Amino acid sequence: ARLDSAEAPGPAMAAGGSRAGSASPIPSASSLPLAALNVRVRRRLSLFLNVRTQVAADWTALAEEMGFEYLEIRQLEAHADPMGKLLDDWQGRPGASVGRLLELLTKLGRDDVLVELGPSIGAAGWWWWSLMITCKARNVTSRLSLRSASLPVPIRSD
Image 1 (cartoon, rainbow, N blue to C red):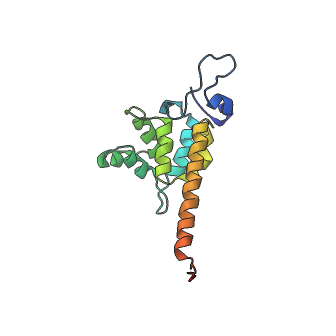
Image 2: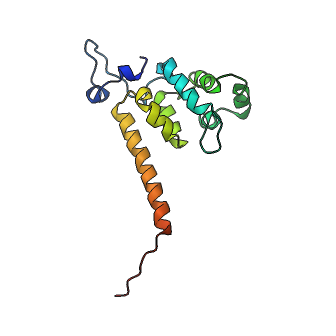
Image 3: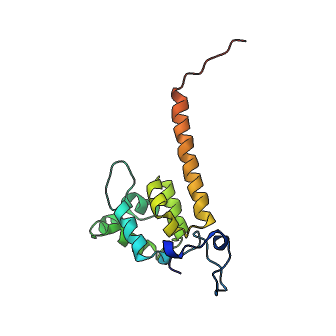
């Protein structure tokens, strides 16, 4: 069951319905195997995460969250597309799924990747939308807490 945005089911299908002519329901992103990510999505993930930057988590931070050891990460650095190789290697490990990948990207604060690729990765299902709402709520909450920390609050003396 390979996914791309052209195959994304509508809300009814994401809730567990099935495609016309098919008896099996669409699996949720949380249970979808990593092998379901097509080449285009994998290449776009690489474009985002192969770039080393001080301000955003790259593929090495993702590798650590996936449970890769330091020496394994060093070996991945030798590849032209370390993110692609990371996905290939992680795919065979227990617990690797599309849903887990989305959770790790969320944990690392890579909302940019989720916004850009989420509909392709998560099949635009309810699970994906709830994840995006959580990301947005977290961002709003963190912005509000930063602002409220610096706002003067008048004290009433009634």
